Amino acid sequence: MKPAIPPRQETIEDKDRRFYVVAPGSVYLALQQEALQRGSDLWTLGGSVLAAWLNAGCPDFPSESPSPSPSPVAGPTRSAEE
Image 1: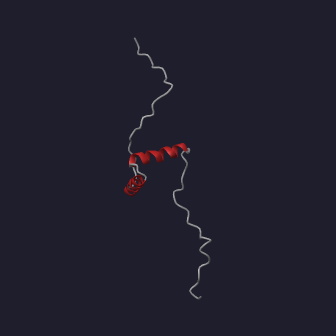
Image 2 (image 1 turned 180 degrees about the vertical axis):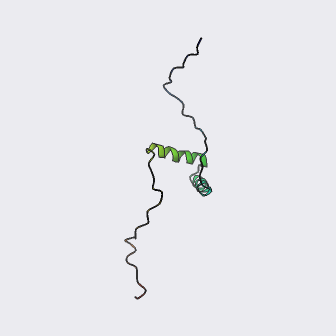
């Protein structure tokens, strides 16, 4: 007798799973510090960040930050001649 294929389930428990990611040590440290400031832990905060990214449709982020534009509040700079 062949084993029967189990029927599909209507609801499946979405259990938390832990897995590894690779990042520079500075990113690891920054995430740990941010988790502490948020009263969380590295694993939970990292998972929340990944879940939010997936829920947003996996948007691309620029690899480099654009150079900041001059602040209109700062006004013109004074030259050395003044």
